[in-house]
Amino acid sequence: MLNTNNPTQFALPSRILHWLMAACLIAMLFIGVSMVASLGDYHTLLAIHRPLGILILLLAVFRLATRLLTKIPEFPTAMAKPERFVAKASERLLYTLFFALPLVGWAMLSAGHYPIVMFGAVHLPPILPAKPGLYATLRETHTILAYLLFLTFLAHMSAILFHTLILRDGLLNRMIPWSVRAAEGKTRM
Amino acid sequence: MNTSESGQISQAPIAPLRGAGLALRLSAIAGAIIVTAGLFLYAGGWFTPHKLTPAAIINTFEYVNGVHPGFRRNHAKGVCVTGYFDSNGQGQAVSKAQVFLPGRAPIVGRFALAGGKPYADDTPGNVRSLAILFKQPDGQEWRTAMINIPVFVVNTPQAFNEFNVASSPDPATGKNIPGAMSAFLAKHPETAAAIKVIGQHPFSSGFGDSPYYALNAFRFVNAQGESTPVRWSVTPDQTLQANSATATDKNYLFDGLIAQLHAGPLRWHLILTIGQPGDSTADATQVWPPDRRQIDAGTLTINTIESEATSPTRDINFDPLVLPDGISPSDDPLLSARSAAYSQSFTRREREHKEPSAISTSEVEK
View 1 (tube, chains in turn green, brown):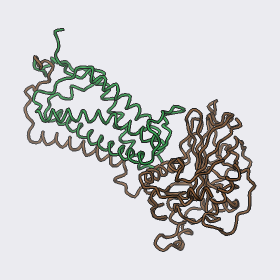
View 2: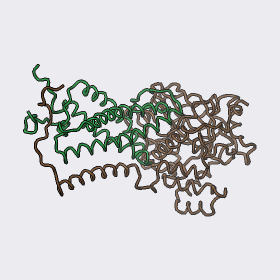
View 3: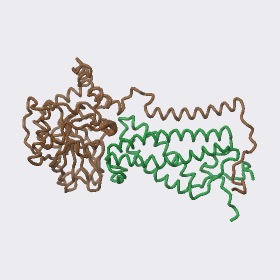
View 4: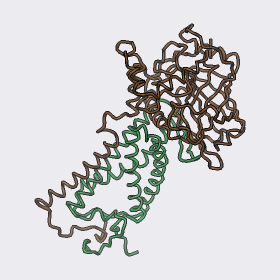
């Protein structure tokens, strides 16, 4: 094996999962925040919210596996140490929330004595015993984590826009779905 | 350590941005953040504080009744029961739900008085409710919250919220607000019509001899995939006795139920009323014509009674949209609103310290 170098981009499955999850998560955040303030659309939104949450949990499993099993691209050379640290920490936070939000939602419905309905006759088993105080805590936690995810998403979006529009260092290339060749005059050989 | 940098994205010599170009790009970024955050907050109702929300509906209950921590914000005074449903298989004609296959499904339920005051005295005219949870063998659930009036008094969540204020005593004075109800009825002829229908169905003497109506229409879907509008109710096997004119005790309705259940089980028939094309499914104030086909789907037997203090049913939300496959919501706007408001009430009460119910363990055992 001659080429042990890190790639220019994340592995293709990671990139596909990134954009797929981005779409699901943004939809989910908007569904969630609308749902709790809605009377007429509450039921329809909730009926989407539950299975979409479980889909996100499944995607998160694949995403983490892909992340751990594939090589990841380097940060741009000019990126300072503290910024690299923040980038890595925010990635960890996002991954944690990808798992925590659906699991807390599932646990919360379990503790609240609700059936965990997916679609039609398909439903999931409870993952916790029904317990009133626990339901209340998990319900609160679900909201706090959702707002935290939204803020982290905003920060993530701001950072990538800053790199793409101001620094123009090609950071976004690492994650765009199509392939970017290393030798297109943008990469130092 | 990397020995090569071939994988790195370099900073090709790009001239730093200055002046207008930089300002434009920075404003584009700021704009993107503001728009995204703004849309999110808008979706959450932050810019429409006067929009009716589930929280606002429950706030109205707290306004008219006071806050009684740990209790349901409506139907606050209640007692828990268990039993079973014996399906005769007739319901399969309209629904593929497992609960309608011939056989027995366990049920838990709760009898209660409408209103948000957990220690209110029982009165002959207070609306009574029966909530039931059917547990199917496959784990799916059917929850229904029924009351002893044949039609509901309003047909939209907005009207419900206004009705709640108009029909309740002013929390400040304890007296009904003069003219509030007549003003509401003038605006809502459907409520006036519904009250007339309700008046034609006098209340029974107690919980045990009363019918209970689910009020809202639902869509039943059978194994052939046919969708049918259905309203259901339960009718008592117990002989209907005339309502008493006055209350004999602050808990006389509940004590009557407790005594009946200590003497033996109580039974109701689950009646499915089948709507015809043209019957309104979106208006809970309207009755369907009396000649509509009815299916007796089986018998509900209630045989144990327990105080909220010890029953897990205290912590069940009888959300009318917890439905098994084979029963779906109709276009009735009250259904989603009920689901949302029940959830709000549930979330509030589950984080509060629980006070003993008026119908205590010793009350149930006496």
